[in-house]
Image 1 (cartoon, one colour):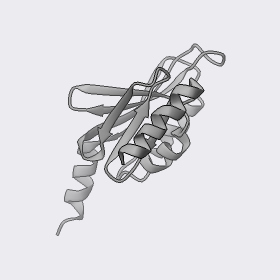
Image 2 (cartoon, helix red, strand yellow):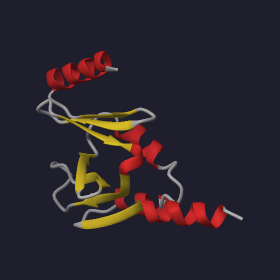
Image 3 (spheres, one colour):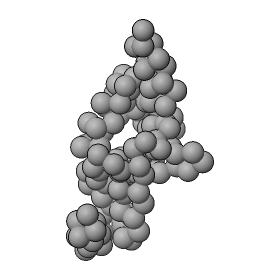
Length: 128
């Protein structure tokens, strides 16, 4: 695991581009400057997309992952966001329409996609 993470850090630091990846336990985000953040899936409480009116030549779409009192902000341009968005889409109750709307938005907006409460409500309603 640590060898894989070291390689990931090395690749990101050389490329000058941010990188996001994940496994069954956590999401890993390597900033352009090489700083790494780790978010465990079971701590995830909310997923949203935030858009700005700054595009198209400046980053204007961000994935925001919430845990407790922290926010992990991942730019859409980060390497690996396509794979992450596919994985996030498998969360129970994920709002696909909001994600589609966010990707076509050119204004300052917030698009809630999933909350832990949604997951809990779906799980509870599935119980006999």
